[in-house]
Length: 84
Image 1 (cartoon, rainbow, N blue to C red):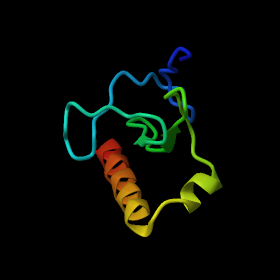
Image 2 (spheres, rainbow, N blue to C red):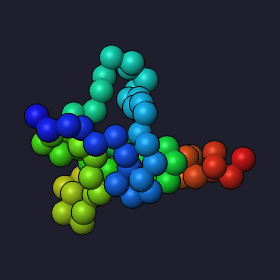
Image 3 (cartoon, one colour):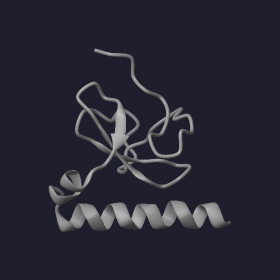
Image 4 (tube, rainbow, N blue to C red):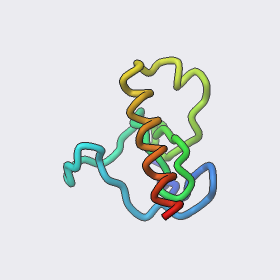
């Protein structure tokens, strides 16, 4: 396995930690999992080496409506926290 990238592929901020949406502290992202950057709120997907990369159109087309809505809501919440 290659060295894991620890920066957001969108804004280049250092990614120092991750949490699961259901608050399970034992879960960590793995290949194919989606993440949101805390700093820029953009969506990332973890590649086969578990490195975050930018999501492409084809990645989003594979997601169901519930997941897309969840991502949109989470992005809105992160952005509203940034405004406070």
